[in-house]
Image 1: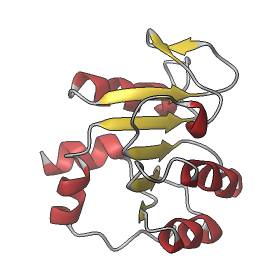
Image 2: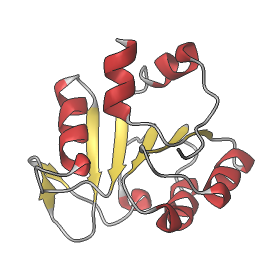
Image 3: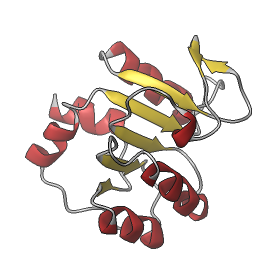
Length: 139
């Protein structure tokens, strides 16, 4: 099992108070976690913003090529990409860091460099956890 961050349940609950979530690697494929997890978050009242350069929209929402392309407020960047692809995403997110508070790497995703970059730039970093599974468990 890959290592997991050390957040407590109360720390995780605070993250869910943030409502604007950019989902990097959001998918139009209903079978993929990158589709059904953000769909669940939308159903729970979160403002999900797709980030996927290969599609123009997902679940009726405009998709952006990168996090820094999003004109709206972003609180959390939820990442559905291979672990080795994460550092450039975090570097890009730092361009909006006056807003972004949390980098969340989904279950099975962890990149030590990305974690270090996030922490050095004052971001909260969650990794190897599923936003849907944790939400269901906590609420």
